[in-house]
Amino acid sequence: MRSPLKLSILLLFLFFKGYSQSSATLAITADDAKLTISKHIYGHFSEHLGRCIYDGFWVDPKLNVPKTDRIRMDIVNALVKIKVPNLRWPGGCFADEYHWRDGIGPRDQRPKMVNTNWGGVSEDNSFGTHEFLDLCKLLKCEPYIAGNMGSGTVEEMAKWVEYLNCGAETTVTNMRKANGHPDPFKVTFWGVGNESWGCGGNMTPEFYSDNYRRYATYARNYPGTPLKRIASGSNGKDYNWTEVCMKKIGTQMWGLTLHWYTLPTGNWSKKGSATSFDEDQYFNTMKNCWEMDDIVAKHSAIMDKYDPNKRVALVVDEWGIWTDVEPGTNPGFLYQQNSMRDALVAGTTLNIFNNHCDRVKMANLAQTINVLQALILTDKEKMLLTPTYHVFDLYKVHQDAKYLPIKFTSPDYVVGDKKIPALNASASIDSNKVVHISLVNIDNSKSINIRTALSGVTWSSVTGQILTSAKVTDINTFDKPGNIKIASFAGAKKDGNELVADLPPHSVVVLELK
Ligand code: AHR
Image (cartoon, rainbow, N blue to C red; front, side, top):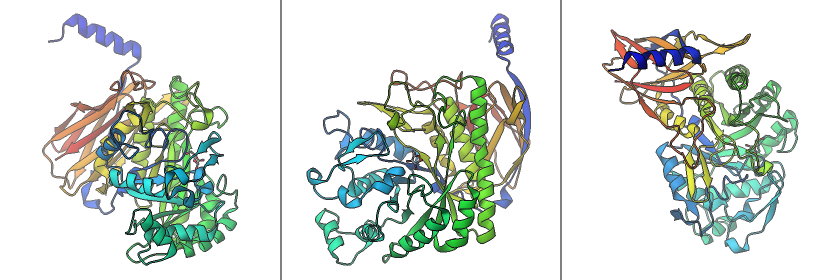
């Protein structure tokens, strides 16, 4: 039993830390389970940028780690565990300067190029089409390739699709066979350009839309592999881009992208540190992250006007927190640490996507390894799983589950005279009738007591898992890789037919009801 002295010390500690509690009431109706949360919302992105591909997935043959060819298998195994559904490649800005023919054939004969977007480093093209598709096979995920529209021709894009997907004998498919792959690869997710409003060609939406139609026409559907063509969409709050693309392209695309990054300061020239920030900056980060909800809602409303049957997906294929690079690292490599704050950004954003699953059918966190909001960081042979990785591990239960609408009013998280919702949540029911509720309490000091009425759910027990840490600045390091990790959560119980839980400050909790 806890001694009275220890208890008083704990209470005193909580008092000085300012811990207190607020409450929220949630309502979940299982009878309304109609929509599916696409597994592709849980997708990832790997660009030829910094140490994501080279020295990330694709390592020096001499590096002393388990490898298949030069693909690092400890990374592959970690990603298989969280069920990565798709991987976007080769960029990003890199995609619109990438010429696919440079990345096939004998590696020692591949041309070298300069990666003008990211650090001006030399690119030896040793990781190309076959290597990427081998990686996807090992990851058991679907490839999502971004074709070059910015500096490539219609013919070049058309031939890449033919190389990948055509079963008939042609000069191009004979090259694929000679390079060791007799059968078509069957790639369906196909991006037509990237950030065409910026690094992908500085186009207007009108010019882009017309060109999309041209490039997309010749990116053919080969038997058995209809393409899911994805148009390059808006820069955050540029609603006009979406309006024009919907008007001019309409349902000639499978998806339209949206890129929105969470900047701690909201300022591109001084984004803020990944590890050293005060509560004010933490609050601003979460406020900027929460904007995703409104941005997605506004783009969706425009899409609804032109596509009321929701055939075109909103594909948020770049999202995540973008901070200043780690001091002492190449500014062009975008290497940043990953804290408990990042986990809260991930949990909140994924809840937003789940709750917009009628329109958001695909999303890709930027980026998988050693770049921006990474899942994995490496240092030579060492690797660590970031707090963000653990959120994807917790949330994998939502992949392809039926979405359960959830209604609630959140208490406020208040800092000075500013406030944002402290709680966000989403829920789903899987094919075994197991309900999962993911809850994020972003308040830095207050726990939240939730009481949930569940209608149409038959359940007798609740279990849970939690990700939290003493401070939002806490990180996993190569010396202490298990600093922040998933723990079992005992703070939830059944009370009659209601679910009651106490969510600690700055925590991500996933509950399972069966
Ligand atoms: O993810 C890093 C970069 O951010 C991508 O290359 C580009 O598309 C975006 O501006």
